[in-house]
Image (cartoon, rainbow, N blue to C red; front, side):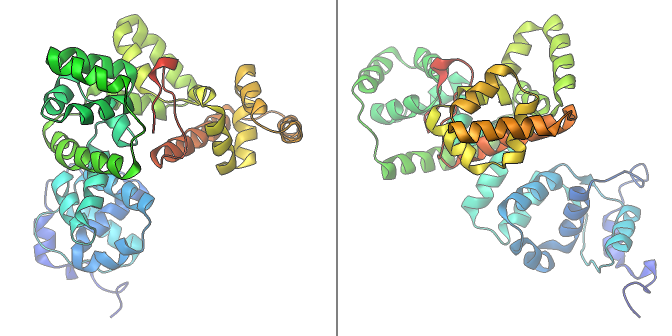
Length: 358
């Protein structure tokens, strides 16, 4: 008998019993990522390993995030997935998507350092690289960790995070140590890449990983991610309402967000690198709905011929949907974040004095 012909009762009893969590979620709608995450979780490390090995890093991150947020899966839901994907699943015990089960599954086929990176990104703090993450760690927590390091190491770390955050960390360090660090920052030489890599690795393994387990993610960081995902009109509506209720919260969220307008603060070298990695159609669509100053900023970083061709492409588009513009701008922002995370460009967030040096 084929898998299609097999009766539903052929599912292992242990799998069915382990998934019983109540009937209220029997008909919960699931996204494609959630369905894939549920199936992979049910397959377990042995049967799921060949599938995970064929996925790229972006796909693994998407599925890991979905798995962490999955929650309980009922037998009815699993039956529906089996029918939909026409596959055989064998597993045992209770299945529930959460941080611990996701991490254990990833560790069955990925090295520890890669799993740490994936889970750290899921659990926060916010940021695409170690220095952005440090800038989102409370100054007293970061200072408590750094005060046990060599002053030269502290100096290096503080030169790599935003100036505003570095000032707050210095203010809570012991005064004698803080003055020593300031002197070293004034005379610091360019740090060799291998030394910087070691510092990053130490921060990631000894500080950030521990922090991820003990620190609850700041609600403003989480809300900044949500606002980044809004379309332009929804973002403006919620931000205006929030400013009326709590201007401080609104400003904190704005400072944590990275938007299309922030691209206009990219150094020339960085924006030219970005232009090499994006589709011309996306750029034309993104600029179509942008401000005149944003248009001129990008045109100024192109050759005259390329800028004129881009203007012609934008004019030929005619009217475009605002949603399409928002989507294109989002793709440019995500590409900029990816390039910054790889150290290929420098991103300035917020004030000019808060430059992030990668």
